[in-house]
Image 1 (cartoon, rainbow, N blue to C red):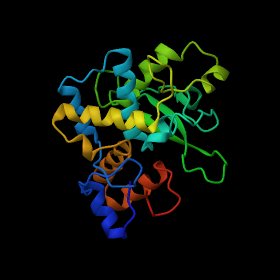
Image 2: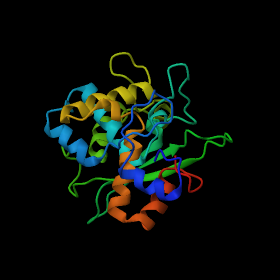
Image 3: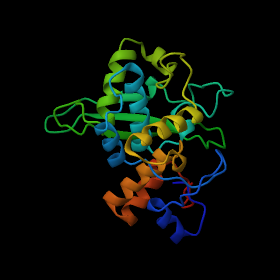
Length: 238
């Protein structure tokens, strides 16, 4: 959650960010991209079926679900080379065996972009399928889109090859997603439901995911989960 103010102000800005346009990278507050917004965008006819549309949709869903910074989806910018020890690769995804009476589950291991000490510690985060029967076309189900993308592009690879294969590359050029790509992607998506793209940026998925968690779990329990899933070291969530 992109918050840099007093603690009370932090809680307010989870759902009431200041609607001011800021230059990219200035640290300005943005609106959150939430699951409900994604559902509305899908209902408006946004492309989720073409190879590019499917991958782009997964990138937004996964960023919301995992509270990813936009640079954690791929790389910060095109001048930074993607690194398997820090980047998000297919080797960081594990589909767990499904037990009777349980929902299909995947574990995704994320390395924080703000890895200042260079330890490259990964945080395993669960993603449950929304449909107990398995992958579906539910536009809110990150598991379903991750599963299909895996089957199309990674299931045939060896474990070693999966570690070297980024999940998010541009379909046409093969370039790894950047913060700029994620920002443009989210801005382009919200236009479908009449929202002002100036109020959104790459960080909006992280803000929206944290807001959804806070609303569903409550402030106290939600804050602890958001801190752990968002890979924050202290209470100053940014």
